Amino acid sequence: MKFVVAITGASGSVYAQRLIDCLAESGHVADVVLSNHAHEVIAEEIGELRVPAHFPRHRDRSMQVPFASGSALYDAMVVIPCSMGTLARIAYGYSDSVITRAADVFLKERRKLVLVPRETPWNLVHARNVVALIESGATMIPAMPSFYGRPQTVGQLVDTVVARVLDHIGVGHDLVQRWKS
Ligand SMILES: Cc1cc2nc3c(=O)[nH]c(=O)nc-3n(C[C@H](O)[C@H](O)[C@H](O)COP(=O)(O)O)c2cc1C
Image 1 (cartoon, rainbow, N blue to C red):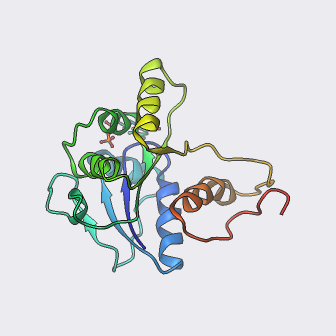
Image 2: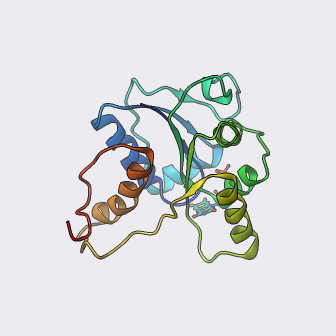
């Protein structure tokens, strides 16, 4: 399967790192694109992002990437973490960067687009933009860890979010114990 992993300047770079690691471990490939602000937050939170050498990396400003066109066949795109700024630009079809253009393409082609927003509290603008995206076909998986599996480490908390992303893009995993199974 082919994926796009987009990373923006919201807190939660560790979610992106874990997703990339899981995709690589399960034999999948993802094109990786970072917004300008993502670099800043990654430096603050995890130092640097580890991306496998065979994962193509792209700049957010050039449209010379295959997934900026609907003709390229990809299975899913994940924006993780997704800032409320990028979320708003996607909701309104701005398409002014690789990330927002690619998200627009995935929506128009009816391909899986998963957004992992991280912000709290929400204002009404955030809430309305989320509604617009759900109405347009995006899947919202807010970066909200769960606790019923009794996570003992930050990594296990992170996995409760990444597991839901993997479920929604069709990648098998055993990151978490499923409820009552
Ligand atoms: C350390 C740090 C943490 C941030 N955390 C968030 C956040 O959790 N959610 C959010 O929407 N924006 C957050 N921001 C602000 C975004 O980086 C900012 O709105 C930026 O314009 C987003 O641009 P982008 O969507 O192109 O990455 C954070 C910024 C910094 C420097």
